[in-house]
Length: 108
Length: 108
DNA sequence: CAAGTGTGCTACATAATAGGTAGCGATAAA
DNA sequence: TTTATCGCTACCTATTATGTAGCACACTTG
Image (tube, rainbow over all chains, first blue to last red; front, side, top):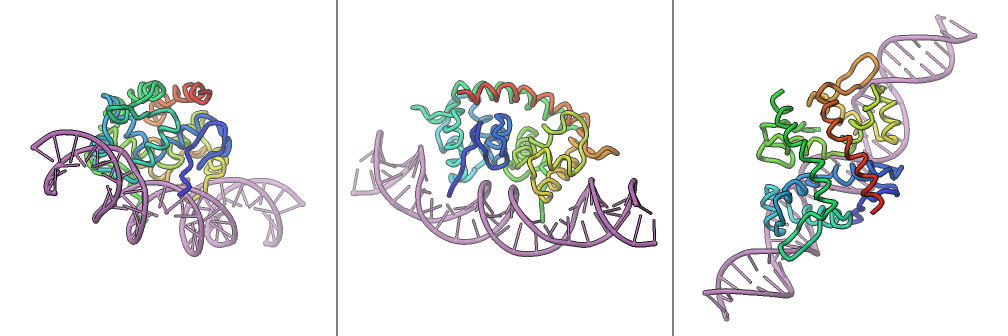
């Protein structure tokens, strides 16, 4: 199971250029990656708590995503479970406007 | 090939709640979806032009993504090829800060 | 007209990823 | 000792992505 975590500066699943934005898109363009970051907005969650928050995503996938997100320094594991790192919170800040916008878009 | 385009208000691949943000994350959390929107930033591209811009993504995938993005009113087809719609440009505007941020993140 | 070129795709086969279920080993409380 | 929760791992199946080939159409070019 060679699950590769996309890293800026080297080729990855979709991108051979290694451009940071492409590595980011590759990393976040996987099932539940965006959702996990989103669900951690209000503070740390345990593995099973996060699983519940993500509508019962399978532990297999959840664990894969968490591994990738940890290798990418977006998520870390603390005493209270999984939490966003500084980088993760920055990213979340950039994603938040999407929440509002998606509400408008949904009404189209 | 029952490829389902996630729509707000109804359950989709990852999300059973139908929350707009989850439908959006599902739609954009597929390979090359983010990249396609990104590459259309500077104007319309032909199918093959877009394929080249996305580092040779297979026509199979490109066509699936375009179909989904068109059904979601983010991309449309005009005389000059594929282009972002008004919604698409709005979304791109929200994504743009990620470009700058990813550069910083890459240096970590 | 014929031949070549570019375009938007579709078909098909294979590889990679996601999803679902069962359950293990550890920890802690009753 | 039982019971319960937690963080996972194993295993299998279903879905999605990737890669290559090539068709049908339109448009030049000679």
